[in-house]
Amino acid sequence: MIEIEGVSFAYRTGEADAVPALRELELRIGAGQLVAIIGHNGSGKSTLVKLLTAVLHPLEGEIRIDGIPVREENQWEIRERVAVVFQDPDDQLIMNRVADDVAFGPENLGLAREEIERRVAFALGALGLEGISGTLIEDLSPGEKQRVAIAGALAMQPHFLILDEPTSLLPAPVAVRLISTIKDLNRREGMGVLHVTHSMSEAVLFDRVVVLDEGRLVMDGAPAEVFRRVDELREIGLDVPLAASLAHRLRSRGVPVEGDILDLADLRAALTKAPRRRTRL
Image 1 (cartoon, rainbow, N blue to C red):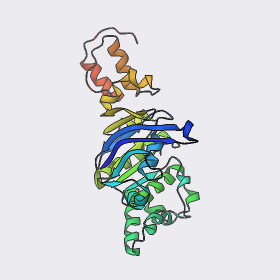
Image 2 (cartoon, rainbow, N blue to C red; image 1 turned 60 degrees about the horizontal axis):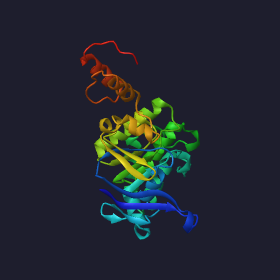
Image 3 (cartoon, one colour; image 1 turned 120 degrees about the vertical axis):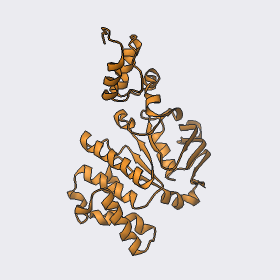
């Protein structure tokens, strides 16, 4: 369980000109949940990631991971429970070869060689990387590098995996496959996933969507619930999935589009049930 209670944080360039990044944030994320976190630049997403991984510490309030307060003296316990994958895998791939990089984290935990080998084999298998375990990192494609970064995080056997915009540098088909892999890992391993993203089409694939704006929690719910609030999202600078936007426009013109509309298949199904009428978009 991740518990965030009344957390505020500001980047201080001086006492008089502190820049607030999070403001009295209240949030709970249960074990095994699939959560997308969205918000425009400056909404506090990156700060939240740093706080959850004990890179930063709250100035006010408290964060607990499985009951352990996120404080400097607990940082290694926190990092055993929470692993993060960044936007650019080159920022966190350290070793020369795939298997060595996946082993890097478990080795730093001081685990026995047999346990390290078991974790590496598991992580490589989970990400479909067995065939390139001896390959040089520099010879990998961007998508393969991102999968290696995730395998390295998985080898730590975290309770929560944070994905900090990991698909933004990837082609759309590769990004879709990566998200599918993450969801499969969640189902099989029960690992909680927090996916920080600008992609609304990715956010709809998760069970829960958390929306931040200027450091505050402004929405929290199932994707269908959040993306039905089209006008509110646009007011804070966010877009919505195309199908949800079209459904909103149709409803505003009196077309009875019922149900949850998250993709074009949902919209087509809803329109086949709606009374036929001539409508101009």
